[in-house]
Length: 391
Image (tube, rainbow, N blue to C red):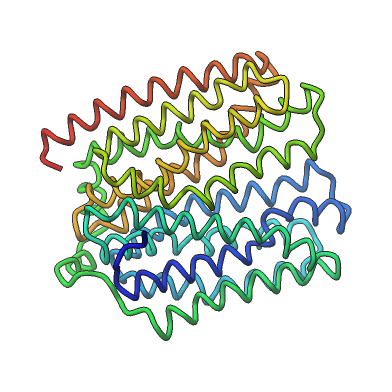
């Protein structure tokens, strides 16, 4: 059952869906660079990594700008500049130019993430935030579910259409914000624009629970990234083929599309830190089961387990950050949290690949399970500390 929330919130959800529906470029970027431009796989990975580096910096910068300028200006900067950078990337053919443009694209694209999250926190009361953020995550995955199909059709005509199509859907979101989304920043938060950067950093240092939570989120994200790095390698080493990995990982998207809303509604009824502890335990357990997976059904079972953890975490984690954040630091807090995930996207593949190759898959999956258990206990301890501070 959908929540009765402001029209502005639903416009942000719809815009998020449109934007993710056109997420053509990043999933196909390495394929485009290697297959279309003839760049070697090793070098083709460089622009992809630079996109992640730009995204990491964007979370922190976007969070600060969101509090200083407001939610709407940051979204407009991101959604109205990104289409031009995206389209320009489609016309570049030299690797240095592509790499620089991809870094800029990662920065401009993800500049809006803290602003959207802060706007949701502005619009939605605390008790409804897990469901509200769950709907946003559902919209993201609903768009992602259809995007590869559309991208495949467009790539059949020309790869340039991928860049232009991605630019168009981002522009549509920008126009929605420009003509229909008002500023949501509370009036009492406007004084953040007058604070110096030093004062803001000092305030951040006085938020140990946020920093600890973001630190734990880094490890949560690193475990999650193994589903796209080490998992396909494990399936191949078990004698399965790439097509079977595609079928198995599609279960993740299908579960999110069909079950994310009821899971978000259920998670909203649980204590916040208990819910995120359960999420960490499920993610650790799901990847831990992979150590015993040698057939397709067991691999799918492992994906189902960690997907439930992913759904709970995606609804509860940003709600916890919104609850922790003072009104004038909602953007900054969401930016710090988002940066931890950006760093996880960079470190997760490197660490996972190293452990997988050096110590074997069993060590990696066992480590994921152990880390998930440690994180679950840590989240519960953090919840007790937050309760003592009446947060």
